[in-house]
Image 1 (cartoon, rainbow, N blue to C red):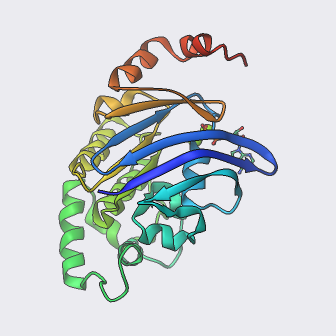
Image 2 (spheres, helix red, strand yellow):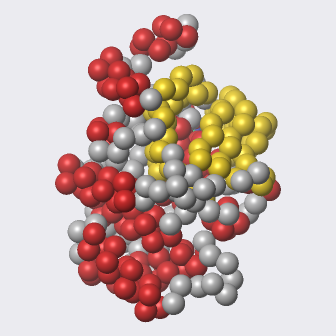
Length: 252
Ligand code: ADP
Ligand code: MG
Ligand code: MG
């Protein structure tokens, strides 16, 4: 499996420092959850990993299998095996979901190793069945008029077909009803193997009732302030974040 290493990462947006030294290592076979109150920089972390131009890395490093991710263009990050659910534009008129999916898969592959059309169609059909997706979703324009639940299922469809080495899922559970949450979780759980590592960013413990993380990290004020096992998420659900703030002497 691959290893994504984030070391002492500092990130600024418009000269305001948001991330203040994040350390995290995710390996193939591991599921990590990052939790934390709103506005602590969780999405900033995801965007910085994927190379969003608005996020300035002022210090630290991100390595994928020892290679400097920060030196890579966005498409090179995909080729290196990184996947971010939010990397996809919200709507693209005139591009069908199916065409977009096929070019995304190929963007994650070496040149000359593109997925054959018939294999693609068969896999897409099977995966859409698995995710209880309406078949006409394939021929609709990307995300145009998709409901919240359809968008998330579609992201999991992309994940399952691209089969990245490391995925970063930012609030994949937000806005989902319980049926959609179960389907999305089923898809992510199906990905579990030694060649796949996952970082799930979530505000709520709810997702973790369906996907058991190996490690849980709490982010506050731009840093990972606490790490533990699944029991940490349960304690957060029961008691909120105040006890951690007290433990660490954080005031806000
Ligand atoms: P979280 O995902 O934990 O809720 P975010 O990473 O979205 O937190 O935001 C962290 C901080 O960075 C917040 O104070 C937010 O207002 C600020 N921020 C995030 N994105 C931008 C942006 N594009 N422009 C300006 N400020 C931003
Ligand atoms: Mg937020
Ligand atoms: Mg966020």
